[in-house]
Image: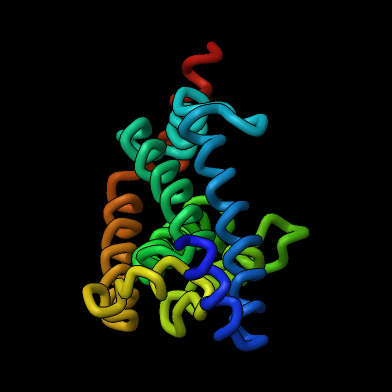
Length: 189
C-alpha cells in the first residue's frame, strides 16, 4: 500500500517536484538538526541549558522559554518542511526563527562573512517559496490532502503575522545590551 502510494507520487512528479524535494530535504534536515542541538544537545549542540544561557547573554528573557520555543520551531518546522507535512505552518516556523535571528544576532550587517543577514534572508526566501507555492507532489500534504484544511497562502501568511508579533514581543522583553554588559561587568568584579 505505502509502496504503491509512493510510486504513484513519483510517477506523477514533474522535475520541479524533484527540485522541491531537494530544497525541502536540505532546509528541513538542517533546521531539524539545529532544533535538536538546542533541545537535546545533539550534533554538538549545548541543549536547553546552553541555549538558554546564550539567549540570556543577549538580554532575552525569559531565556528558557524562548530557548524551548526556538528549539521546537526549528525541530518541528524542519521536520514538517522535510516531510512536506503542514508545509505552510512548518515554513512559517522556519521563517519565524530566521526573523528572530536577524533581529537578535545579525542586524544591521548584511554579508554572512560579517555575521550579517544574508543567510537568514536566503532561508526566509526558501521557506516563503514552500509556504506559498507548496511542497510539490512528493509530500505528505499531497498524500493526506491537508491543503483542504490548511489553505496554503492564508495559513503561511497568518503564520508570518504571528511570527512578526512573536519577534516584536521578544524585542520588547529583551534587556537592552548596555544593561546586559553592565551586569556582566558586575558579575566579573
